[in-house]
Image 1 (tube, helix red, strand yellow):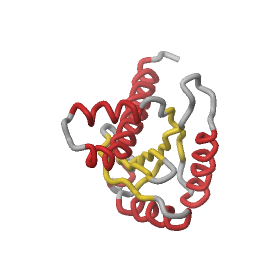
Image 2: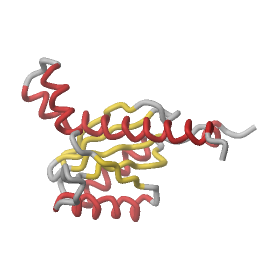
Image 3: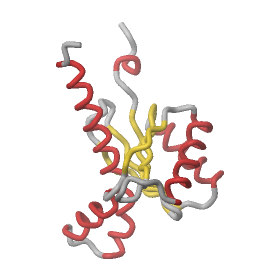
Image 4: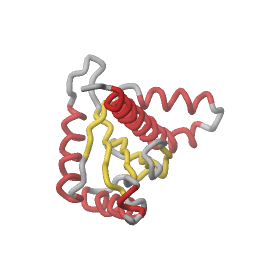
Length: 156
């Protein structure tokens, strides 16, 4: 019989990468649901990667999903280039698959949800990046589940 780690997929870590903060979310072990974990205050590349290494180890992360900021038209922006460089750095440092996932409107959706929750503006500011990471990851997980379901029902 295989050990549990051979049977269950590892967790996915999602990131909403900004210039000052990185919102984080992880999946459950089955890759079905996303939960926000924390928001990292960015300092410098070395410190950011050290903090992320701790998170990756603590949650036994096997894949990373990075919110990919595109303009509403789908065209890359200056921020897209920064996030791409960051994603490449993650791949090099951790040797894990790093998926780029369209994050258009996740911050807007996160802000709307938080406004409707009637929490203070200060707490909203602290939570928006984490909630955006949750939305990015849940969207990715749902898409992956749909692809797997379609593959199982496709007679090809």
